Every structure is written in structure tokens, then in C-alpha cells.
Length: 91
Image 1 (tube, rainbow, N blue to C red):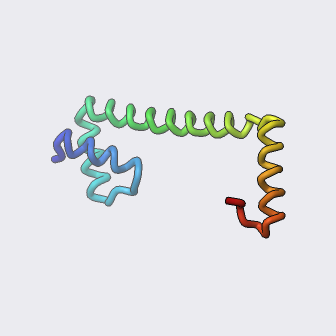
Image 2 (image 1 turned 90 degrees about the vertical axis):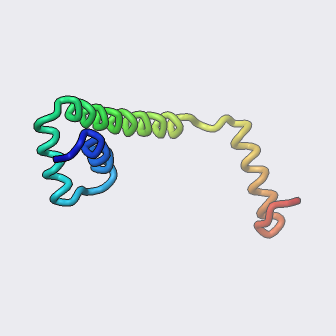
Image 3 (image 1 turned 120 degrees about the vertical axis):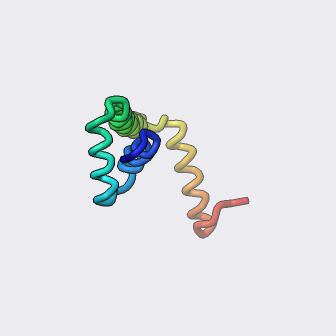
């Protein structure tokens, strides 16, 4: 029988890697008997979903932000300068 400490480690590891047959069944039995560990596992899943959503939202926000005309002009000047120097940045 797993302890709560062992079960919490397995629940956490399950987020990152597949568990072995023995680990899965040990965790399943422990979760069946332990409400606190069931709650912990649900909280892990919720945190993972929220972090994924937050990451997607941040990526979308960055993608939606356009460069200012000033920034585009600076980038264009640097690229033109690099091309005139054979592709090497000037020192």
C-alpha cells in the first residue's frame, strides 16, 4: 500500500511521464481510498490546464502585438546595413 507521500509523487510524475503498470495500480488503489490525495490529484490537473491556457493566451497576445513603425524602420536599417557589409553586422 502506498503512503500519501508516495501517491503524491506518483500523481505528480504522471503529469510528465507514463507510469508503469504497478505504479498505476498502486496509485489507483490509493486514490480510491484517500480523499485527500484525490483532491491533490485534481488540483494538479487544474493547475496544469490553467498553466497551458495561460501560456496559450500569452503567446496569442504577443502574436497580436504589431511592431511600431519606428521599430520596423530600425530593423530595416540594421538589415540593410548588414547586407551592405556582406551579411555581417557592423562593429
